[in-house]
Length: 187
Image (cartoon, rainbow, N blue to C red; front, side):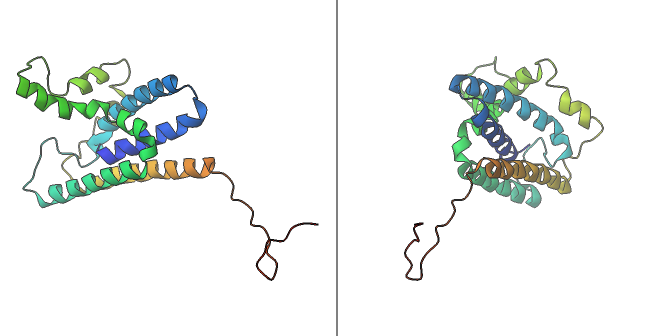
């Protein structure tokens, strides 16, 4: 999945945990665990989405879609920055993309491509969830499959909007005004 989808999942997780888990250390541990778990499951169902494994900068659709992905990811991160811990936890496995070039530049041969993804997928039960659901599909090169991820992101966005609505304070009742515009005080 793309960054904006992971960010929406992480923001929804943090939003849901804020009211339920008051202890910051426990909340962070849950955010990290749930963020990583949802990342792996979302990445495994990415076989249903437009997600070519290699960059295709010469393909106009690939290029325009990834411009959209970059803008959407930045927009989600800024709009929901109050959930930045959850969003960052939701992309921990993607730190591979940052560590790999550094490891290569430093000559670290022990760091393999996808080390973090592989580590988290090896956790009992985690690696098989999404792959089992999507084993008969591979739409990663179909441009129309981008709509699947957009639909998943839309559902996650709707969850965030619902959580915001559910946890927002009730509107304050307006005080009645007299004809002169002054508040009316009960006698």
